[in-house]
Length: 125
Image (cartoon, rainbow, N blue to C red; front, side):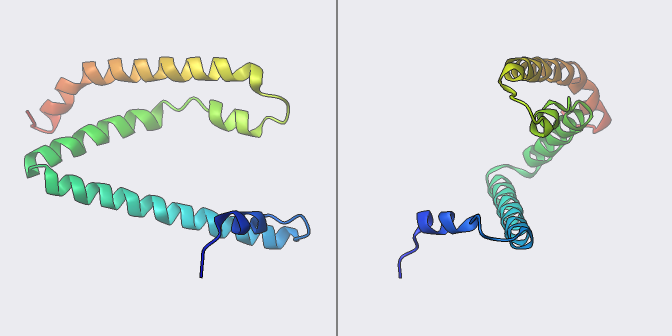
């Protein structure tokens, strides 16, 4: 039995289906994608735990904590706004990319300046 991806993809969103069926199918795909993402994340952590020494793995955790904290508090909302916009968004894409690039540079600068204080707080080298 051969798995035909193209045929399965065509059957995903048939125009004759009702809203309920499409919603359930979309929810199932979103759930499967989220589970797959979590499996890859756990696998990545397991591989890193095997490769890195315990001290290095702890330093990685501290670095990830600092990066994710800054990432969370510096969201611009451009992605959500562009997704919800009904009109053509091509004119906004350059501005969104520029703001995203500047945000990345600003996060780098903040992390670079805050890193010694984070290391002192966690008593890490």
